[in-house]
Image (cartoon, rainbow, N blue to C red):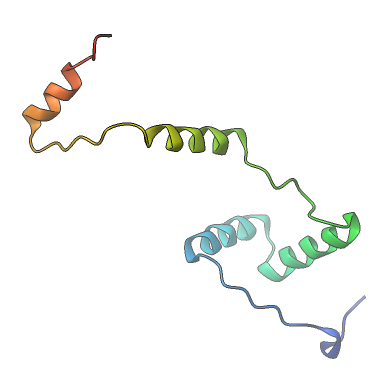
Length: 95
């Protein structure tokens, strides 16, 4: 069923450019455009009465977050030359 222009609503959003470009590449690979993808997304929101997917981190995202948090407690070491880098790699800290 075609929707007349007077029954359409323009939705404008601002997204991170890299994210939008990457998503557009995926959509192109699927053979659909952004309007079709967003229409499908909105239809699923209506059909399920909410977000059509779980809003949670993937196991990989959880692991990355944990690594990021754990790395905050590590000391920062400034390396000025290759000899200092070699010493850092040679120091097994007792292991």
